[in-house]
Image (tube, rainbow, N blue to C red; front, side):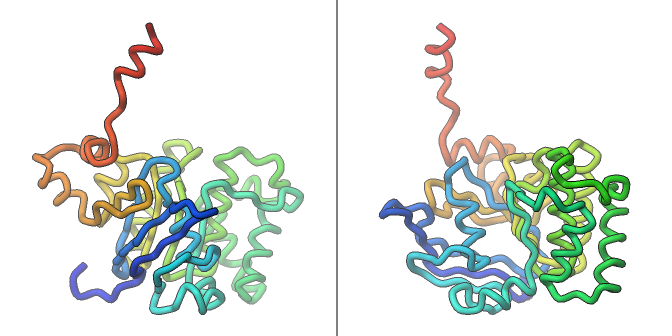
Length: 255
């Protein structure tokens, strides 16, 4: 990745809620075309970080840029060049899948012809064609997830923010999403993604960042991280750095 421009950069980025620090002094550097996976326990601050980078949450202090755009002052411009798939997608349930994607296309000011062509491509790719004219209220969690992925890709963003994109997907759909992400990155798209599936991070991404209690404690390639810890698997390294499973507590519960 050396020599590539930086796509996402932060300096001392922090966010507190009611005086409680959630993200602390975050210094990120994600290069263009990089697949960056952000790891951390529940509540570590991963989603809060994504929302700050998109301008959806104002930082308590610190700075950040996405493709050189300031996250405090250029939110509209950031939304034009990024795609976002939240962990808990809540699309309008009384629209059909096709209508929802048309609405997203309108938001990004895609012409009707261009929008419909792109929607058809994505529906075919994600195997949603058969359900495209059905109301979203009848969709399974996996179908809603695929619809959210299509919405994030619709306007061909330069940076993708994906919060747990393969949760609730069956193995075939999850494999398709992983292959698609890898292909997009190889063509220059930057992907910033969270997941709890550490094997996915270990074997597929270019760099991992580990967030622990709001602080970034690691930011490097999975292979070099493993090498520094005696060849340990990423899951073992993650638990060593953020806290092992408390086996005594489990034994006490089981009596």
